[in-house]
Amino acid sequence: MRIGAQLFTVRDSTRTLDGFALTLRRVADMGYKAVQVSGSCAFEAEWLRGELQKNGLTCAVTHTPAPRLMNEAAKVAEEHKVFGCRYCGLGWNAFNLSEGDTPERFIENYLPVADELLKGGVKFMYHNHDQEFQKVGGRRIIEILAEAFSPEQMGFIADTFWIQAAGGDPADWIRRLSGRVPCIHLKDFSYGRKFAVIGEGNMNFDAIFAAAEDSGTEYMLVEQDDCYGEDPFDCLERSFKYLRSRGFE
Image (tube, rainbow, N blue to C red; front, side, top):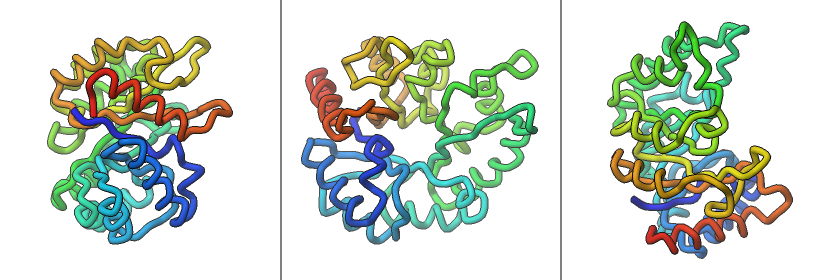
């Protein structure tokens, strides 16, 4: 398994192309070899390919805006192939059940997206928060989605923090989704339901690492949604050093 940086952590530094380019360089200088592109400014696929190559980086997965997935899935797949990324992720779906945002509506909307991406050689990936652990008709939304989409159509970016926040066991859910979690988000969880630098909170990473290894995970992507006033680059670097101390690269 390889470790990578989820660039949403440093999203405020990727609002312009110049800032995005500098961010990639700084992340590479820390020692990261892979990134997830998320929360950045717009960019051309050829530009990203060049910046990744310049810094010795691989793009493991993206978070791609829902409107682009819904309306331009074939083009999105083409772009991902340009910068060498096999996984295309949706970062958020609210599942406001009272407003009609149901699992059935999601399935109707995104099955065609998943199929179109797959035709282009790119796999659709769903990133969970805590709302997917609501129960509908006695079943969790995440279970409904896993059944509606085949493993070829959709994988899951299992997010350790949000699984824990929902009352789940991250290692257990990674195992339940075995074979469908090529990319996971590593987030630490500290007292007060706060995000933390990896290794500085209370998450059971021994169990998570073992589950990820057994479940076919390729990339463990470090993410910290909120750094609470600390420099997010410093947080990413401390997480990287912890993971290196555990034998990951």
